[in-house]
Structures are given as C-alpha cells and as structure tokens.
Amino acid sequence: MPTKRAVILLIALGVLAVAVSLVWSLLFRPLAAFEAIERGRLRWEGFERRELAGPRGTLVYWRAGSGPVVVFLHGANDQAGAWVRVVRPIVARARVVLGDLAGHGDSAPADGPLSVTDLMAGVEALVAAEAPGSRVTLVGNSLGGWLALVYADRHPERVAHVVLVNGAAIRGDGTEATVNLLPKTREEARQAFDAVMSPSSPRVPSFVLDDLIRRAPASPLARLLAAPVPEEYALDRRLDGIRTPVTLLWGADDQVLPMSYAKRIAAELPSARLAVLERCGHVPQRECPDRFLPHLERALRESPASRTP
Image 1 (tube, rainbow, N blue to C red):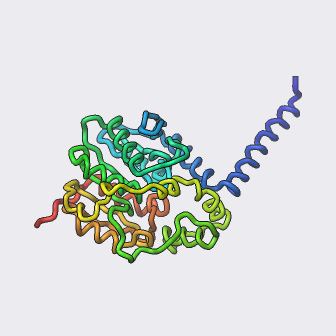
Image 2 (image 1 turned 60 degrees about the vertical axis):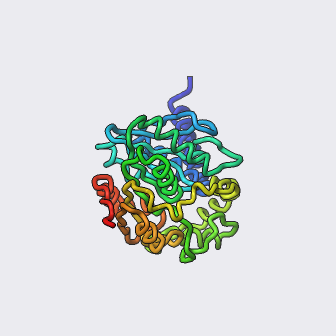
Image 3 (image 1 turned 180 degrees about the vertical axis):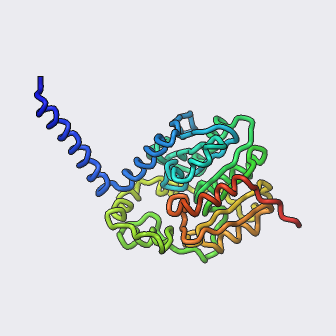
C-alpha cells in the first residue's frame, strides 16, 4: 500500500496538473476556457442541461425555474452561458430557457455548412418543446434578437413580448462601423473588440486577440456568412406589421449597431420602447450586467403599449 507521503505527493501532482492545464487553457485557448467557466456557472446556479432533436442534429439548452416561459437567444459565435450573470433573479418568477443556437455551443452541427434557416428551425423546435401551446417572451442579443423578431413575425400567436438587446433587425444605413468580425490580424481583432465594447471597459489582452484570430475561420459566424440569407428573413419595411410588443435594450457605445440603428427600429415598430444603457456595448448582459439587469427586469414586468396612430 502507498505510504501517506506518497498519497500526498500524488494529490499534489494531480492538483499541479490541473493548475497547469488551466493556465495553458487561459493563455492559449482563453475563449473556450471563458465559455467553460460560464457553463459551469449555469450548473452552479441550478440550471439543468437538456437536449432535444433539432433539424440538423441534437440541440442543447439549459433551463431552471417555473412559471411563464422566457427564452434567451445569444448572438453569433456565442453560447447560452452568455446570460449567466443576469438570469438568477428571473428564475425566481419564470421558467428560464437558455438555448445554444444550432451550430453554437454544444448544439449540432459542429462543423460544415450553417444557415439562418438552421438557426430559425432550432428556435422553433426549442419553443415547441418548452412551451407547447403557450406564449413565451423572447430575449435576444444581436443575431438572437433578429431570430426573435423573425419568430414573432412568423408566429405572433406564440409570442407575448420580444426584448431586443442590441439586436439586428434591418439593413444598415451606412452609419455603422465597418469592422471585420472575422479578423486575420491583431489590429483587425483589436478593432473588432473596440467596435463591440465600451471604451470604459478594460482593454482585451493580446492573447485573447490571438485566440479570436485562431477561431475565426471555422467559427459559426464564418459558416453563417458563407451561406446566402433568404429574402424571407429580411424585416426591412415589414417591422410595422409586427404587433408583438418589443422592448429595445441598447448599449449606447455599440458601434456595430449604433444608437441611430436602434432608433430606426423603434420608430418603425408599432409597439416599442427603447432603453439606453450608458457605458455598455454590443453585449451588455456580459459587459455591464449590473446596469443591464434592472432594465431587463422592468422589460419582463412591463410590455410597451401600442403606439397611437
């Protein structure tokens, strides 16, 4: 039998190996390590990981709580853990569902072609599985916001409220920053982060920029951009037909989808309210959760009234 000293040595070596692995991940695969931490926090917060059959394979999502269903949809190149900093208070009064969009996180397909149609079919499958026959609130950031509005346009009877968080909805008008979201150099990666984050936030270190460059060619965003977007997904000149109440929560420092873009959307929607989040960028639920959460809670309590003609 091993001696006590040998057991202690083995434990110490095991702890050292874990520490070395963690440091290596943080230095050379920081984005994956960051995502793993967020998903670990979901488990810690009591979320249950679930799976369902999707159009292109298994879809993964997380859920917790009970009551009215609130479905959170993340943006491109992201995953369900993006919402972990803001969902704990929501779970106390609702069933919170956090989806990995098709081709993102742990949801299939892991590689190969990916289209907006795949993502939309995944959202439809998720809502059908978690809220059969009932209405839901959809909270969507960036690409997830676009999907939420398309879903509301297609299935108005299934959606009580859309919360659009710096979400794409219509084509730009030229005021948006021109930035390469699939960078090939550190300079391009720095410009991408500067466009989506507030200047008041800490600067992203170089090893994170390098990881973004490494991941870009095979990322979900690259796979999406390689596929044409069917015209049926374009909401230009159709927003006035969306009768579902929409609350827009907008990071004021977003340069990819700036405030002028948000105001255009709000002006075209029949039932909309715009709340501005100062010192926040394109992903406020992650960058400035303390300022974002009160606005989200208010949005979930109060749907905007229809605009009087």
